[in-house]
View 1 (cartoon, rainbow, N blue to C red):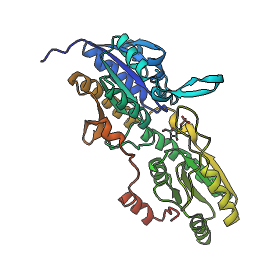
View 2 (view 1 turned 30 degrees about the vertical axis):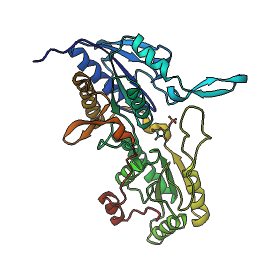
View 3 (view 1 turned 135 degrees about the horizontal axis):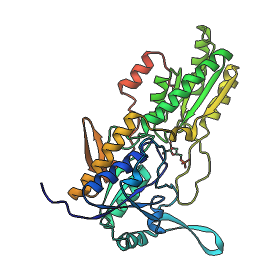
Length: 364
Ligand code: F6P
């Protein structure tokens, strides 16, 4: 067996949290310790490298975290070092490129490699740091399942299960009260969570960004069910869904140093349904519930495989790459290929065709 060179490796989690992040951290640390490496945990994403927030990671301090949601390292989606919010003239916050400080701090900490666990935004930052000379590998993370190059990401399965469980519960109350219940789910500009939870949870209508909807058609489907004696309907709306010829709905104006948050389309859809059908309609926004809780078995296994594979990539010196599920194996792809475009639900895929064939409407 070839000798493994001793080294000091950093690990960070960036962007929104997601179930099974701890499974990845645990696998990275255990595998690295097995290779004889020292691991430094960087707290709060890239912020830890800006503000020197680090902690040593040993097999002992990743013990007992496999089943926990969240991330023991903390995370943030508002600390992009390439447009970092700092106080400007007159106390107003301005965006500033402080990436040079991060590269310097990485070296000062004696790090020889970095494992970055994050979604699209964090992997974009990682690629820029790789271009600036930081030897790093990526691990794709997101409940949204919108990262190219990997068949799925850990966290997605748990989020879908949470949404499906909510739909199961909402069915009985919708039916008892003869109501329409609109359920807004996360997913950014991709409808993966909506499609999977909607099919598994028996939704009647699913609205996704990939298929702009016509609210008249949504109302029509509800009234057709009414005529068939089905006096309730469950409508799943992805937060990134928008009407034909219309706009996305945002929860806020764009904050400094981070992406603008989506949210509110469920409210739009619910009030239009009441207006067009006269039916009593209720709205449930699942929000961050989808990001929390114990990871499913699938996510724990995938997270563990990704974490161990990331450490192996470092061992091989395969920097600038991201681990990826290419069944049956975990392989790797260049990070730049994965971040080039977003993986959305293919509308000509059998999943949509099958959903349509069993009577689910997409509002088109
Ligand atoms: O990307 C994960 C995600 O949960 C999206 O589904 C959602 O749009 C966004 O993060 C919410 O971000 P925040 O943590 O800023 O509320």
